[in-house]
Amino acid sequence: MSSTVLYEQDGRVATITLNRPERMNTMGEDLNERMMESLQRAADDEDVWAVVVTGAGRAFCAGGDLGAMKERHGTGEASPRAKVEHLRQRMRSSQLLRDMPKVTIAAINGACAGAGLSWACACDLRYAAAGAKFNVAFRDAGLSGDFGGTWTLSRIVGPAKARELYLLSPRFDAAEAERIGLVSKTLPDVDSLMAHVRDVADQLVRAAPIAVRNIKANLNDALRLSFGELLDREAERHVAASLTEDHLEAASAFLEKRQPDFKNR
Image (tube, rainbow, N blue to C red):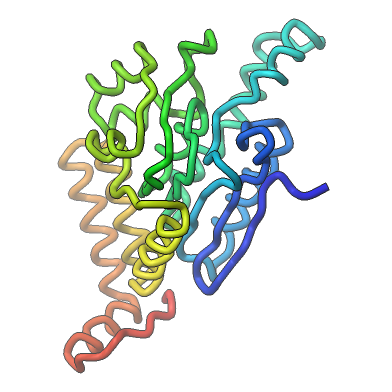
């Protein structure tokens, strides 16, 4: 049986492909486990500087597997508290997408809904094929939402728009996703999407990795710290980056009018 999540590394870029196309890459238990393993592998690998997440077939990820949820409903001995703890462990995937010291990119090739949309929103950058369709979907499933979407979507499209998308649960296309700022760019088809995302990833891995990590950390901190606290963090990280070999290489390459060769140190 093929894996429900595929992992491929090409140069400094790792691509994680959700591979349950017959179920629109919905989040079965095995897919969730394999996704977490793949994200942790990319996060821990010093040779990986950017991570792309996409889906096989006609979906990015259509969210939770409602069929499996229905079968499990009311079964087992687990208490509600135990179920909360289990779900919270599964939701670490969203936190890792957001917090890992690598840039994460969602290449949204098709249907993106529910917790799948939460995963996409946890990534640093999002791009979509023109045929992609979006829906928060939780309300229609009689659920309130998980995997951090209420937090991330509110910060991507603004709190008023996020409330509309969660409470009214409209279906919308890639053009609308780009219009509201959910995705940075819409590409004509999946092939052009993947080519564009690879170009973006290659641009990122040509940059100084310590600087990129520190930029991501600053942007994350900017959402939770006071301005004064953020200035402290910026100063610490800026000075730390200025003491690296990569900073000296960047300065030398600029002055010598050549491409830099960064070593991540």
